[in-house]
Length: 361
Ligand SMILES: Cc1ncc(COP(=O)(O)O)c(C=O)c1O
Picture 1 (cartoon, helix red, strand yellow):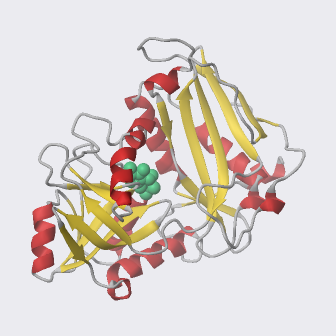
Picture 2 (tube, protein in one colour; picture 1 turned 30 degrees about the horizontal axis):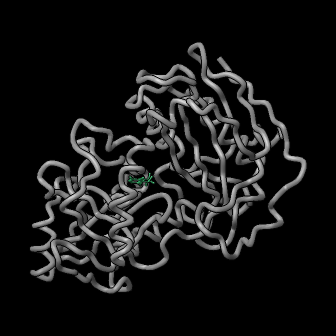
Picture 3 (tube, protein in one colour; picture 1 turned 90 degrees about the horizontal axis):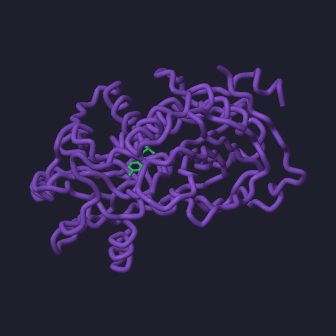
């Protein structure tokens, strides 16, 4: 095997235009991107090139039929200034799970990881060192065949770009629990990080945002009763000291890397964690009994976002002040210190870019 990645360097860098002390999320892009094209059953022309536009055929099949998937992960710098990436193999596995569901080709681990290592090394000056910031890495794949008609495409493009980002939500979020729209259902594509899952939630999300909420907390698609996830985050509740999060069994929610990391850290700290069906009735009941201590979302973008308030069937429910939420604050700080290389990596989660990649640049 072996995929050779060629490198064409940008002649000028845009880095001087960036205010690293005030980084918005998702608006700045580093100087280079990785591109590979799939045809005749394999990946070809693996290349790092200056960040820039693609030319597109108007009948590009992903635009019409939605064979399009993506991932999101982050790089930071350790105390010596070396790039470290948090659990990239989890994202790699999930990328291929999404690809399989959308009848798209697998990306070999060697190609995925080498492309990220090389790209992050080349643009390492773009990794911010200001608090709560990091270099966001966005791998994605889309069908590039040019035709009209419904059939799985045979040509695809795999791209990775990166960009420096600051904190996503830096205040508690207000969520709206919908009993009208649904995001996913068993047998569907809820567990895949495919573009259609995000397109489908735009209109309901815009509706709740007009009413002053940040995000929707989705309920299951059949009974409209069990908690699913929030926007681009998995959801957790703490009832009477027990940490509860919806299980992955139905295939309706994303298997979040942050979710898994929180569960493992919490178990390691001696907390009881339950991955199971969580009904909205149970949440409301615990709230009225004074036992609902906390609710929060987890995701790569925000790490942990506390829910300040939720709305369900015409009622608003206010949750305790964030400062009093000892368990989630502790778990969040454990996770962020592992991610940034400040705490011991007891789970072996950090990927350090191999020195051989530096040597070749
Ligand atoms: C729908 C959805 N749920 C949950 C998550 C959280 O997953 P992770 O922790 O891997 O970022 C994301 C973000 O990727 C998402 O898009």
